[in-house]
Image (cartoon, rainbow over all chains, first blue to last red; front, side, top):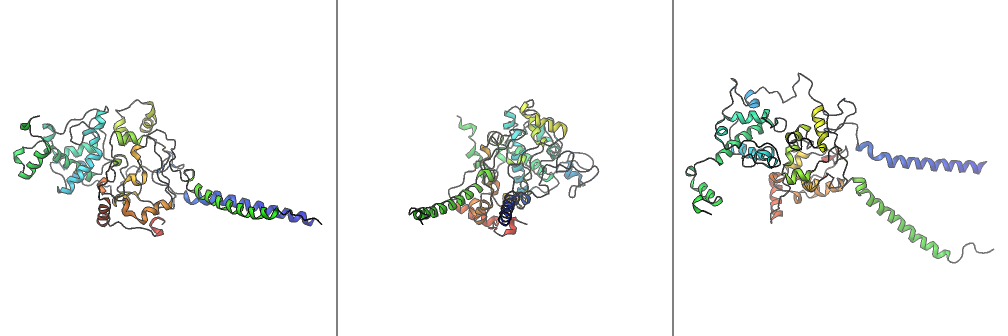
Length: 207
Length: 216
């Protein structure tokens, strides 16, 4: 009897140790790796649409998203007319920010030059108007902001991709872009004229 | 009484000591290798996705900036996966009837999210923040690899802690100008080291090695 009992006990100990080792190998990792909380945009088994990211309940405003500044958020003044000036001072920083954001969000279709021949257009998207036409040179600046915000024709709204301050920066930059292609060369300073001549072959030089 | 062990047992005993030691070292090396292999880290692994989205096509061939889709990368801990409406900005006209894009159109039609499989899955006890890395001049491709050359997305780095620490010990060697962070074709200047020292000063880049920098 005694040796048998001892062998059984040894077997039980061994089995217990093996089970513990298996548990340790399987369990030490995943519990803390995958904590019971949501990462941004994670899947949810709780909400009906399967998404942990929740839409706003109707009639609520997220903190910091109260659009009480009509001009800043719509591009229109209190009387409903398109704004003729941006709601912030035009600085070099604003223009550079506008150029950066234009290159990210607008140039795929409108082209870096604003001629409407971006890569997505060359791949088959409907060609937008060039910014270098009289109609668009003469629209108030709020027109650009309004159409970036709400979309225009086949162009979707960019309100969720570009925050309003950047939409204004792009609108301001569009004015600079337009001037870059539509300016009397004689009005340039001698330094700028020299830089222009260095980059663009003058028509007189011929080919 | 005869000897139980023959004389050769002496050599056998010594030999088994050597073989035993070798087995222990080999098992250790195998474990070391296994823990760092793609099988464990998922490095280089291509996951199945609802749509075979190609970064190669959209970034390298069309030239779309990372931030066109990953809009939150400069302001938030998560870079953000674009909503289906971002896809539809172009695909309402281009490849508008392609069978491959049917899940995208269905998602847009029904308001149901696309269920992408997460490629870069950090453990939940690591608090990684994209915006601070981008603000300090660490490029997308520094961690995500040559995304512009990936027809299908995969995890380029191991994402193991030793990989994080390699850069956290010497972040200066991985810096570039902020405005070049999303530029997949950036060519470093000849005096790169000098530029990086200058950037580290300008951006106040620090070597963050405290546990609580990432685990909090």
